[in-house]
Length: 445
Image (tube, rainbow, N blue to C red):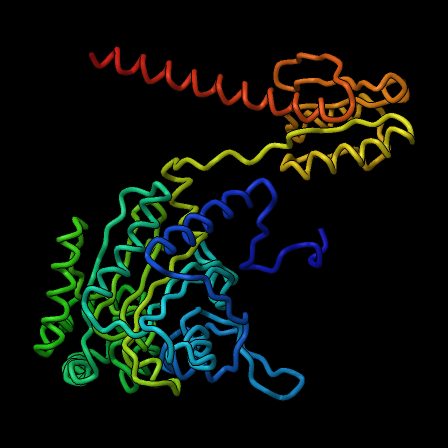
């Protein structure tokens, strides 16, 4: 196959047989976020490069190695978004949302882009859902963001996730910690990789993110941020944990979580799965109290999270989580002859106007081929319409699931027949479910 007919490495097509799962997951996320007062926002897929350099941090792997950056025809440096937070902050500042009622709560869903080695759960074009909350300084806000992430994961039926939390303090805590960390890694610099030696001179905390086995082993024995928290940050973190306990959410404190972006302060957290290999983090986030100010807005304590939809779907598939069935085609109208084609179009539109999905032949097939097609697309009912049916004013109506077939008068009787058949099918399904439940209850007794 020609390379032009293949998706670029690190990207995936979402085909029709899979897209309904994505729609289900995305709608669940937005619906659950709405219960917490979050409303959807949509920001451009690209921004001025400086938006990400200023926010994400020029010492991070994202900025140094992974961004898709190019000059546009006007000579401006443009970057495809590697994450949503920076663009969302830019949007909130530009449109003065911070001057309205606080906190501002927004959620989003869309594609992000990072140039890194493709592997299971990590693509160059990937999809994220996330939330941002602006103007909320209290520890209860940290807890609520975590509770929202947990509620979304629970609503999708995902199990066996562990919540790990940490505090990386305020700028003053970080300054003292950076000094201790730098001193520790200086004594190990001959053992560190080339990249980590560069990080040592810029931001020693980035060494904690290194995936090299040697550097990871050295980092495991490094000083931990929790030992350098000021009293305010300690109290904040203690309160976050107490809110989570009061809500009945289990967690562990992982002092090695720092997250990969420079804008985080105080609380950081991750939901981790053991079902998808190396890329085990399905959701991560935290507080970023200085970011809005750093990007030219007011001083505004803020926080949020993002979760990768590809990874969530991998976990759901692995765990056998249930997805709703893909909506079937309600009716296939099989016309035979030119006059029947016009009537077929009319019938389909009348059904669609009533909320039923209806399709008809667009390829000039014969009856046998049309029936095969109706069966392949999973149509519940099929209406056969030829010259004879037009003359008699009746069409042949077939239930594709039971094989039942009878004549129905053209017009409103078609609609009422479909309603009746649909209602009977629902009643039968409910009756079967009740019988199954009764059987289970009898067995337990």
